[in-house]
Image 1 (spheres, helix red, strand yellow):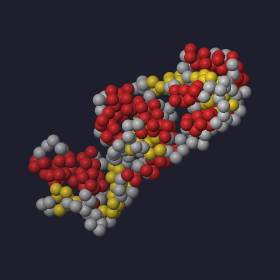
Image 2: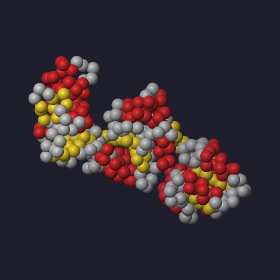
Image 3: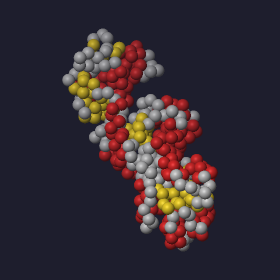
Image 4: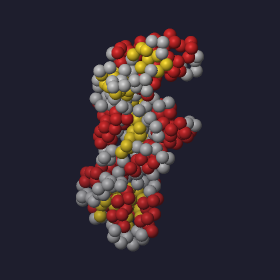
Length: 368
């Protein structure tokens, strides 16, 4: 299991159970903390007004941005007794979908096939729209959680009449405690990675860190040991704006995101030849010859210091500081001996941590 020994935070509000199961099957521990909440607006007057506008004056072009949003629009219209009229109005339009999920929702509604950008990006979708004259063209744009001024303003400047269709909106999560715990875990560097499947989730995590007064610590962790993994460049945008790097799924799919983590996360931790075995620190565990061995916080702290200088002798005083930075190192010689003994037991291979009499301990790196 490529993620055995790692802990991954999940910020998604939708399909969180599916994502958790995928990560767990790869061996990861998962800490969920939804950074947003999706609120349907089936009773929203704005959605009904936009629907009635499309029925009364059918658009020439319809842009479906998300599968859940397009399905929600059709379902809301059916609830008002306007479902058949809406589908009839949309059936005569040129249909565009930002990605395969939106395309699938359009097909499921019985509407003609759509055009989709290969990149699944709004930018390519907008460029496609602008490739033809838009003066006087009525364009219905299904929104996805927020307004899209950078998209609709360009259409209007090109002369199009734009009907914005607000199907759902993003709100703060109902369970703020779970998100607060996730933020704390990132800041404490207790997570190895955090996944993002929407831009609002990335923005929501940053906003929550600001509210908790630890935005600087969160950014430092995400720029360092905690890997951000995003389903695509649109999702990464709020993090990119604050100089947080991320690995991106090769395709904007949940499975592709998990596969990317499986490939990239283990590679951040070197695997070293020590005493005839391979040794790798993996989050809350060590991998000995590829087999995960759970570690206590103290064992992880010791091993991290030893792995920082493989083959070199690390003094007991330095190891004592790693175990308890605020205590007197001179009083902790016995504590270090006990912690090393527990570490050897946890690794299942005592020879991996070698005692150097009167000096300290070392990892006997082969070739050193």
